[in-house]
Length: 553
Image 1 (cartoon, rainbow, N blue to C red):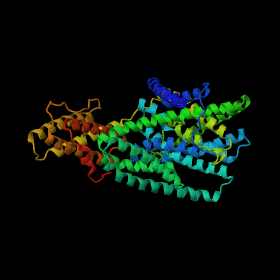
Image 2: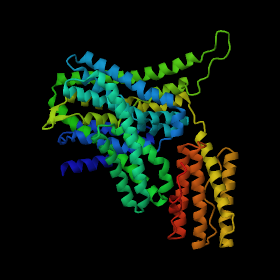
Image 3: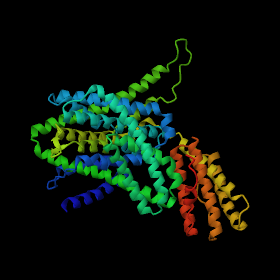
């Protein structure tokens, strides 16, 4: 009961710290990390150790699915080289640098343990960076790169992490079998993710109750992860592929009255999991600190500080080096003619921001918590206390140092939004409203009601066209109601109009005219419009009208 009371109190404190972080413009994980560190110093708090096999499943699976579900394949393809460089090159460099630093400072540490430490601290957490960046509205491409990187660097880092932990516990690792194993795991995870997405898409349209739908979503997420792990595949890669494949059709088969509350539940769950991760680390740090004398604590602090600095510098070196190489490759020819153009290379200012957005978060904490503690299932992981202490120190150090200085850096560099998403949103509004007008223009029962709806959509279309032609400052909203109640005929007409809007929106995303960021904003507007219709005409479920149509995405 005492532990439960502490967790409830800290969840409430986490909510307060999040509100404070929004006011002062810092990422909320930084504030929660400080609270977790303080928890380790509070006398009387209990010691709590999470089952290592549960740590990655509980904390990483739902957080990763939530991020992958919103990812834009179109934008990722446009920036694939930068994203791949960060997810593979930056992660590999960080692992090597951290492993070398750890070995130099702790000569008795086996190389496999040093590599495992490097893999734990290698993947940055985009949530902390984007929490600040979205408030300051930088170029959309920076958000795409950071969010895309966070999806795939987790997979690459944790694949190496699993190999290193296995080698540590087994005492050996066959070098000749590593590459074939990685290929099998990668291909198998991608195939499994696609297959499971098709299974969930067969089940989802048959569920119309919000509570049941949310339970199936969460249980499905954990089931995907656990099945991948049982098959000795990558849970992370499987979940990413599963989420991205499911997202392409989810908008077509999930009605608004299910989608809106389920999104709210997922946002709440991700927040709670982030807070719980820092709470659990605080509990374990207290036990670790109790086992250390002053000299050992100073040694641990020195190792943690050196690893934190190495982690930050390795990322900056990779990003700066890649950007410099691109500029060198595109330099003017000796005869003065223009050199080749690199449309996806980062500018100096953009590279500075991406290099500094290396805050670590929940994946690092979960990987550290997942290290074997010893017992009936096998031996404890060597240097586990040092690795966990160092991992939390890196998370805390990067969140505080980089997270709290990111806003001043962006203000100094003056990187501004290029307006690409806003333009796509305005275009999508115009196109969907045109589709709605077209759907209501044919001869239909209830001429007067049809005319009323047409006037509503005409007014909304004029406003959207004004936004598209102007600077986007014109207010957007539903046309004012004239006070008439919709009857069944009106609901049927509005259903056809809303269905036409959704199909046009899906087509715009499918052909690459708009990205997922614009799609999600306009989809939310259509969802609210659909719910408004259901209030005016009870029993009219316009979301089901779309679910019976073939997917266009």
